[in-house]
Length: 500
Ligand SMILES: [Zn+2]
Image (tube, rainbow, N blue to C red):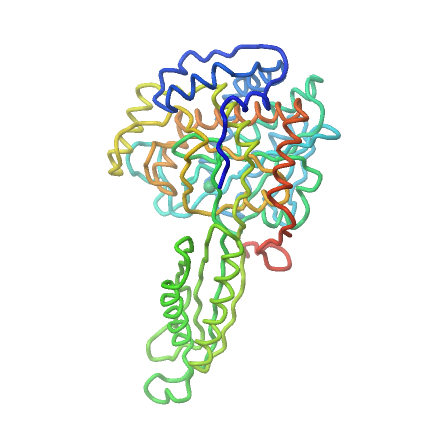
């Protein structure tokens, strides 16, 4: 059970430097969060240091560049491990800004790191840029594909990469100016939607020597994340039998499809005897070619999830037994291959409190009438309440954990990880769907992207300037991790790259 947060503790961790007020005229005009919380936070709000204010200003100065980068990646819409132009756009921009760029790290041509500065603290920030297949969409408030059947940024990763690089550059400028001391690293992390590029980057030690790392994610609401994500494992289950004519000599055959069917039947019976927190979902990838040939090969693809890696491991052990049993019953051979997976997110509470304080310090998002009308039109089109864009900041207390997994969680087990969600898409509208692509390619997405960049830059500045805050972030990480040994869910050898 998480301990209750006491609002007036937050500023102690954040306070530093000289007072430089920020224009926050609209703080009270937003419906989110409840005015009472904002008032409490505002009254006790710390003063911003010159470096922190300058880092935020640096984002605003580069707003057009960052929006341009995001729009290019939005238009490229490259799927996992094929993000060549997207990764190059970010890596080239980082190089132009004076970062030392290492391309093709961890065996993935589209993974890179961009480093600036010397010595500790080393603060990292992660960016993603892969699109999703089949979600091509114009930046319109109705479903209109840009190119029928093509990919689209249905998870807003075009914004993700651009904002995170923006934050890294803002910090770099303060290091150059002598206002901050240490190193900043941008991690270009590909294939979040597929193999989980970060798991390979963790395996290959790329986060070694990093003191803390930040990430954000596009969302339909804004909050410093206090909720975890689901651990999951990705499995291929293959059955191999013997082919024969299905009518002429079926006794010579052993059906791989029979094996797969019995296995999946076992999975479905097992559902009654798993924890309510567990999820098991599958597709059938191969199940024979024609009815008159008994299939000698069949393949299922499964994801097993729970809020704890230990529960996922338990499900995995049981599913392996189902495969063995189905093979025994059908005279086939079963092979279970772990293809990837994620741990659950190790939430860093001091980190979340710091991000939360900075979200409040920066104030709410302000949308134009046209942007709110766009959001409501999307909401109307998708049958959700027409409430427009979420403007404010959700409180830390009472956040609802939502289903889903991310490879950011794997990083969170090796380095203290601070995570924030920022609204880039109409509240309540479907995710991994056209509304996210549409809003991510116009001013609503740009505003969320810049807000994310500002809050991360401000938070990173705090971590450089406040050794006690960084120490609190690291102490909580150590305490929560305890003696758990992190082992990634990745097969041995290089990442499975596309062959063509
Ligand atoms: Zn995503």
